[in-house]
Image (cartoon, rainbow, N blue to C red; front, side, top):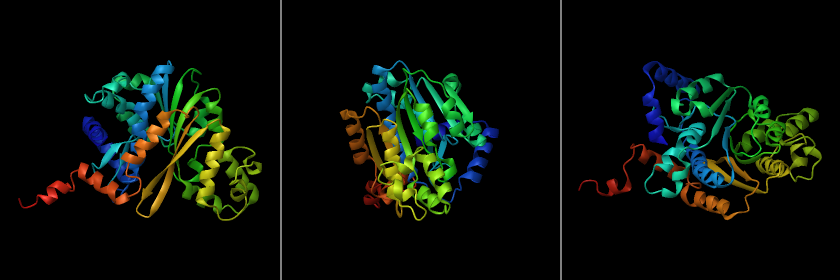
Length: 334
């Protein structure tokens, strides 16, 4: 993902490269670390090939929807080129990369990737940057939207026979979250797997500062559905009462909301940074009773450095060639 990101950046003309550099300088401060993003993008990247491989057996068309696509590249560290593919470009280019590996013959049938991809972002500059990274060969199957996902998503009309993979990665504030009504409207009579980043701490803080009871209920039910405050969900009473909200209550509310949308298999993956859990990824699958979900979760637990942020950082720095490997260190002076 790092190499492909550099290739895409190098493919731009000088004017476009200056535009991209200026964008990252303004919106993604280079002095901050974002190494935790690797875990999220790793989980996403590992899900895509499996989704495509299984989906092609049973569905005539496979669709990808990215609700908060961003500019297509993700800044990881302080260096100008410490970048990897962001979620939309992983969905676009990763299947071909995986299918082209000689030691992965089982994935050769996914080389063409998704049949259609929908990239949505409320920031028009994000989409402007993202469109620069879409090559001519893929232009026909990519649809981009410069608008609020809550306004766009209900109006994306897809064939009921398609299988959809949704990647939902909102920004931290309450206003950027995907509403229950928009998601429910889009999912009606459709089959979709969902990977969702849930910024539990940000949402809990946002709801905690609302002092008006009616305003609080309106915001909570925008996230979790009309009537949630009177539902049997264990976290409903706490979230709908003025006062401090807990992270676990927010996470439980999302589980309840997804269950009400017909999702029977719901898994949570913690995304950690230096001081603990930053947010969670939720994987929701309606037909997830099969062993393939178990295999995916087991793979993520074994392969992704979920517990140690410093391990994740060292792995990245080794790939980025800023830090010598242990082998090189032990052989120093020989």
